[in-house]
Structure formats: structure tokens, C-alpha cells
Image 1 (cartoon, helix red, strand yellow):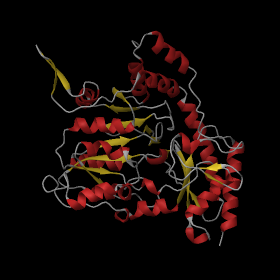
Image 2: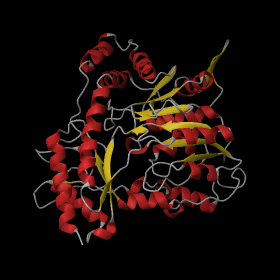
Image 3: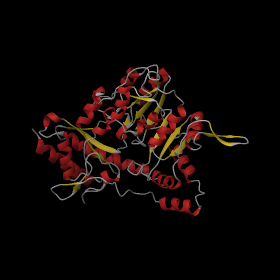
Image 4: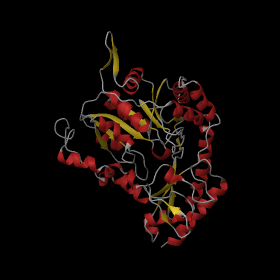
Length: 422
């Protein structure tokens, strides 16, 4: 059970590591929280269809068809989450144990779980300075003869530099997986996130931009790869042998999205475009106000991209304030912006000590062979990513914010900055 601590105003505060509903419940009457979520008007209709059909509806097929059409891609498989979507892709690649997957260092465990369960080795390379996005030059420098794929995480809601990443992948014959779980309907040079790589993985868990209870999806334009993923996820690796029945030719796992989750996600996809527009409008309005506060800087959105704002944040110059970054975030939360905190836990190389133990003791697959060299996992191996998270304050964004809410948030942040200025 999540621990809560009181503050002077008598409200309950949650620790920075909270997530899901616990991190996003409303804390004041002035500012709304992410919950309760707006549900698409067809939610109950679609759920009723599932019930009335006696579970014989094709709700999963309707959901996957809708999501694929939204992204102009031919193939989609619904999964139980983004972790499982990436796992589906990893199971289908059929790489060798000990092969390497380059991964964004500011991410979540779900980005690497599938690779680990297939005994592939995650290799974290640094981000671009001042951002949470993987640096294409660092990708190039991190490639070895064992590198097989790149997981580009569109962190917070902003896409990576996909042209540069795809060019690198083409030169080295690598597969690119777009982790779009935080960036649905964000764009890069007019293209939707998830439409540029070889595989795209999405999350529809309740707290995500398009929350549909629990769920995810994996999209691709590669027919052969889609067939492999369907075999691993839906058939659990089985094929039909005449006169025998199911024969498991590959390792698989049942990861398909349930009908009811498909129903609520489908309904929420239908209202998502206007929600994204509302998120962008209010976030850009707050960016303008943050820019006017000395010592703070909004997260820069390049002109060739749009941000879908699953999460909002700003950078703090520690030299200009007498308080720590943690104290700054705590004071903003106490002022009324629920869930405000730091997010050092997103620094994956520092957040997976079990991998560092495995690598240091040469446990499988870090023994040689199948590993080609020694690996270690430490935060200081990615200094730009580490520096970003040491200066970044964030909270979960919602389409419910109005102009008045933005002005209130700006006033809270400005007050904290002024009270702590050196």
C-alpha cells in the first residue's frame, strides 16, 4: 500500500516514486487530476456489445483495425500493455542470446523487459544534452558487431530524431522499435510517432494519454514480422501438425488484449485527437509563463515536431536557487500541483542494479560466450541523461486544464522560485 505523508495544508502528499492512479489523484479543488478519466461516449455501448455477444464480439479486431488505420499501417496486434508489445517484438526477432539492443537511457523497465526475457543484452547510450531523447551520435558510437536493434523511446510525449536514427539503422542493417507508449499522436516532420520505425509499441494503461484500463499494441508494416508476432502472442508459438494438433515450434506467451479493454480503448481513441489538441494548447501556454521565470526553462520542442504531453516538466538551474531540486519539487506539490516531483528512477542504467550484478559476475547471458565483452550499468555512463534528470521537475498532464488552471500553476511555480532564489 502506498504511504502518504501530511503537509501543512492538511492535504496528503505522495512520494515522488508513486505512479498510476496514486500519483495522479486530484489534491485541490482548484486543479484537476488525471483521474477520473474522460471516457469516450461509445464506451458503454462497446462494452455492452461484448456482454450481449456472450464474448463472441470481434472487439479486439475492431480496436486493432482502428489503431492501424489511424497510423496508416497495415498490421496491428493488441497486447496487455506496452511492456508486452515490446516483448512480442523481441520474441519475433529470433536474435541469438547475447545479441545487443541499444536502448534510450531515460526510459522505463518495460522498454527492456522483453529483451531480458529473450536473453538479449540491453546497451544504454546517452541522450542529447538537455533532453530525455536518445542521441543519434551516441547510437552510432555504441554499435558493435553484436548490435541487432535500436529501441527509440519517445519519452514524455516528444519523438526522437527519427530521420537520423533510421539512417543509422539502414547503414548497419538494424531493426528500429519505436516505444510510443508516452507519445501517441505526437509528430515528427509531419509523420505520426510510430510510423517511421520497423515496429511501434503503444500503451493504453489507465494513466497513459489514451487510457483504456490496461492494454497496449504493436504495429508494423512488415507482413512477415507481423506473422511471427501473431504466432508468439496469440498462438503462443504453436503451429498445427496434421494428426496431432498444436505443436510448439517457438517459445511464446499469451499477451493479447482482453475484449473489454479493447472496447474502452477503442472508445477513447475516438476522442483522443481533441484531447491531444487541448493538452498541447495548455502546455504551450504554461511554457510561455515558465520562460518568464528566471532560473527555469521549459522543455524545448523542436520546430519539426509536436509534443503530445503525457508528462509536463521544466528544467531548474540549481545555481540560482538556495533549495535542492527535490525541495523545489516538493514545494510545488505542496502549493497544489499534485504529483510534482523528480524522476531519477527514469535513469535506467542506474535503476537496474540486478543487471549490473549479473554483468559483474558474468551470469548468463553476460558470460563469454554468448556476450562479446564485459558490460556494466551505472548512471554516470550516460552523463547527459543523468544531468537532465538531476535538474528536471515534472508532473502528469491532463486535457482538463483550462487557461485559469495554467495561470494558477504558473503562479505556484513562480512563488516557489521567488521564495528560494539566491
